Length: 381
Ligand SMILES: Cc1ncc(COP(=O)(O)O)c(C=O)c1O
Image 1: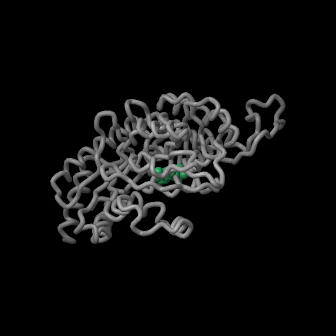
Image 2: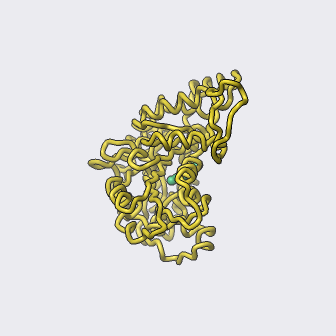
Image 3: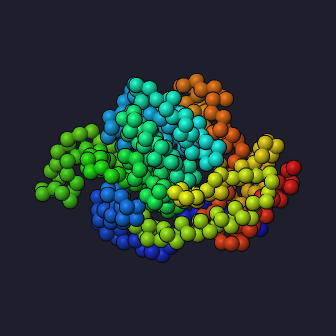
């Protein structure tokens, strides 16, 4: 039997040496590694500005903080996402207005956005679900018409391109995550990219207490002013050192993911009981975060039996995401959404199994995953 975790960070000697170098030095925060990581990330994505932060959630929160989002404001948020996408809005006292998903990709159903815009709406947030890009041209059209800003949650979208432009550069900010199961990791960590100099300048201060000068900008050590409110959302040098080394190998990681995804897709093509989301085509380039096996109506009742079979046979799985965010207790209690209010997102949550395709898998692992899933289906049918 094989043991195949859903996600496994690939940490090599280069990462270990880079981290040891930081630990053997004197600068653990505010140092050259976070600057280097920002420069490399900007170069990789083509972003004019790139700001390292402590998580994707921090990047999302900083975006709303920068725009002064407050109680009484509303932000359009996809229902099919991680709680963080909506929490960032809630943390500012504003209201996330959830939009159901589209069936083909799991991305926000763009056709439903306009009807949900009110005088209180300030922004549209989108998530490139499982790395498949949202049609950002249509999103920007709606945003321009209503004078809204656009936040791209790119937690699963390093290597995602829409019309040849990297995810995160279509909206006003793009927020990335380097949590361990992502395409690359810094343990915890995130990055905010933007095309706007003013956002970059202000968020750089806001992520570090609102002080007016970083330590390297201070002519007299310890002397600075605080000109605005701010958080402590910095990325430290240990995380940044990891990030620099991981980013050097990101193209290899992404290529392997794509190959694994395509092999698994081929191997499961003829399994009638499952379907999957639409992936890369024309202007839409996915980052292939995972393979989502969507069980048919009959089998979805047996989903956890199938998951249990897969896990028992060494195949790690996950669910993206276990409920539409508005159906999590915090949100149902607060906003009283009915159980049938997000039918497509609910269907995804209750019918899909996320299978691994990360670079930690080889061709035999993929074959094993496909065979084990087929056996699981036979067993529970
Ligand atoms: C779509 C999405 N947004 C945000 C996050 C939160 O990222 P972080 O843990 O870096 O804050 C996640 C985490 O998986 C996610 O899937």
